[in-house]
Image (tube, rainbow, N blue to C red; front, side, top):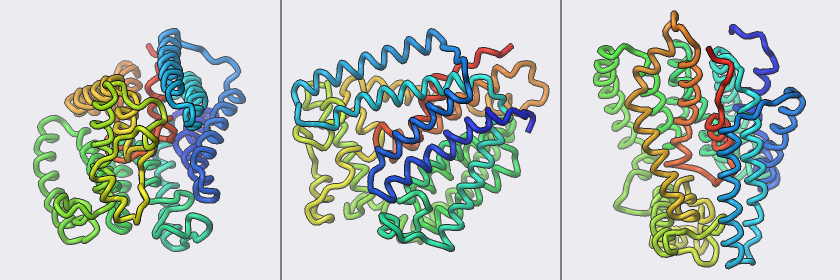
Length: 408
């Protein structure tokens, strides 16, 4: 580790490790995730105030923050006018504070060295996997932790643990040391089968591709063809020989809850976008009166004996955003997908450049770090999420606003 600035390490450890753990702890003990998220956000705010007396505010970032705030308040005022019984809409003020803290936090980490990001990612993953091993040996059966099998304390569900690990795992697979990344890929592969967890398997697969991006183009293509072919042969074997995975990928029977929830989210987005004049349901209205439910919701209700699941969060971030914000959600969705495609085409070149020893400027390193953390939000955005208030979205916002100003 090149940097001796312990203050910077504290700030990074907080958003990568402490923030998701605090957020989840209140869900496990009291059944309320929102309280934990706001406590973690308040903690981030006070940490910045304590550690950074003078925070520089970039005008461009301030403009984006004000623009987002105006849009959210406008959407809140119009939807609240038509649905005054939805108290959840009042969380718009919490969301604005959430955005503000992410904006301030991005200013607080703007001068952190790239080696610190590598160091903190490595040790955050190490601690997360230690927690996973401890939870296997000593399972917790207090509160909601007694409901789910093979959970990783303090995370109530395996999928929530994956949501916390995913952005760090994906980012570190790009920027981390060769041997360390191989070790973490092996561990994530092990736990994806041991739990088992389709979520972890997806994250491991993408992280594997991220790892390959460090090779030279010729070696990258050869390695990509050979290793990916081998990997997918093993993947197919696991999927069709482990009942858990085969059930989740069976799209014909339509009796697996995970599959049904995902398709429910897709139809939530499409139906509520088109049947609300392309403006969506409005902030935090998904799942309430006015929501257009679909056949997958009905099947879930049958399986759950009259109850619904994930009707408020849509199952993944993009579904909730499009269903509630309509055409604006579509624009944001397309913009992020374009970013993902553009990043993936350039990932090999940029990753190799990042690992060059004699690179003249650190500017490309910072740009790449910013991009990989924004890219790492793909899982929560497209596959599995639990709304706007999440550790993963906070990390995404922080790096979205990030613009280091001390580069040469």
